[in-house]
Image 1 (cartoon, one colour):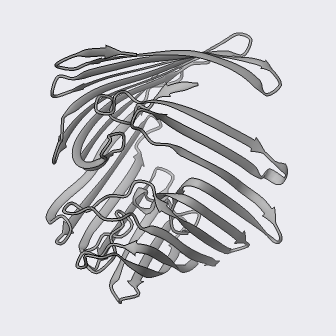
Image 2: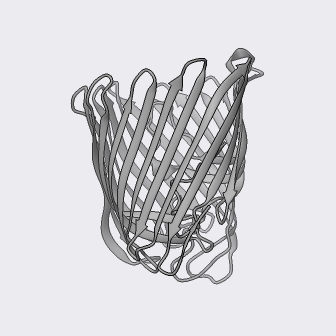
Length: 402
């Protein structure tokens, strides 16, 4: 099956086409194995991986991930993991849980390493060990991370460096947690954060302060040398049909990219009832985005406005998103994009999928794609899929299609 990579810039990247392969199998004792592979052309990137979850091993349970995976530090299950805590690596991760104790080993290379604004540096290797133990209302943990060829802002040559961490979580009432993280490099540079999270039947609120010494290694957003700030995020289910959400970050960066600014996003979604659509409205300010599909990847800062529509019935599913992006920085371009996806279930276990995207840049360049496929079940676990896709691009000097 082929499909467009809608998340990547269409015009700049020559309308990348991708393919995805996916396998999932439930094993004995609730264990599960998953394998995936995706790639595309031209000028896009590949992802692959194998994951084994909830495998009974000795007195405990183990998880294993090889290839591309999303890494984060160990935290209690009832704490909502923040997006800035997660980092995509290519390598391996092993988790083992026995009762209230968890252990995590990981090693890999950052998939989408953000370069410094003023110089190009080598991508470091990233490995470590995490431990966590639950003791009643307390959760205590820590670990050590190791960076191979880490970049330090005041040194021209990369160095190997270790970062030690201590983490403490304390539950209070029935739905709240206070937490503190302390990190220290092997050169004695401090960093960390402290805050609280409150969860309830109508939403969740998280707030914390953070700070990194300027002698910390560069690995954005995990380590941010010379940056300090305040981060507040919340989700509130106002009614059974209305959900609001938002996040505000005030940051002061005095070293890497000197600035004093507010970033964040705010939005709402409305559910209009059974067999009726839901509506999404979201606005983000100073959102860092990476152009992954370009031949020379670049980082830009952008403001984004999104209006979305989702609807489903017993046989149909429809999703549409209209986005307007205002970029700033070197090579920045404003762009508008409309994406749509429709699926219908037919008789005799058949499905029809159609997707489309239209994108226009401020230079006047225009791109559009249309893809569709039919899936039909044959027997047992087997299905056959047939599809077709077309694309059109308009530039100032020429038009082309595929």
